[in-house]
Length: 122
Image (tube, one colour):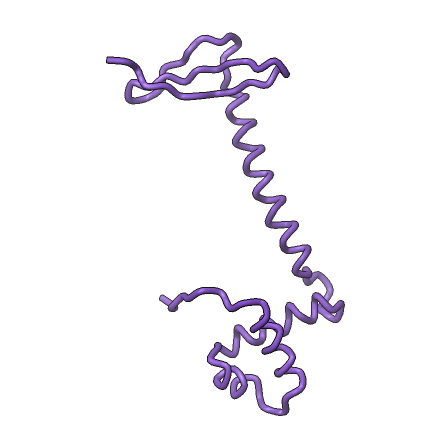
């Protein structure tokens, strides 16, 4: 299993890309000098090319990657909310769950259905 470490700061990556573009050393030699893997340096160069508009067709810029990550998180939350609403009973009656817990459904004034859990009192 590969070793993991903290991500390199963006300033370090930008400086490494600048050095790689303006240096006559080979990428593996420069990567060794910087203390990073040659594959990491290659991926930083590829990403910098995409951000500058010189990437391969289909490469995503950093902003597009961030937006895609944000949208995927949003879709995941919406799918979870949809699943909760799909399983909601027609009325506000409690529904028993596993291990003595109850799941209550309530309607808010804006007609939103909200689920919350309560422990059964002894």
